[in-house]
Image (cartoon, rainbow, N blue to C red; front, top):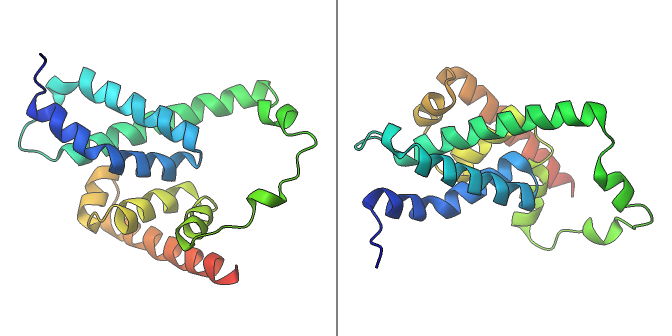
Length: 165
């Protein structure tokens, strides 16, 4: 019988938080699942690089963010050469049934998808995940003033979007 290590137990406990951050980055449930899985694979493969005593969550968020940046770059290069598959799949579909949100959380998450990437990741880490400004600053490699500025702009935009609906 396999016994999991403390590292793997901590990683498993982070799954819901990693999944939420993946959704905030990708804006798509399927992409979020793929990003979460890739992050877990990378974390398990790179387990020796993590230093016990440091924050595993910050380390995993950084892995996820770097994977998402790589994915976005790859996708933009591919889209420059090909038409998106969705264009062909959605012909004849009426988008109206999916527009009305039933819950406030769904409205906020939908509004978050409209935020610029830089604001969305800061809003997700601070307002959704509960990290402090300094932690997010270190995680993203940004000055605290930049983190604060992005949070204020993102929060203001979210309030305006949710208030309009």
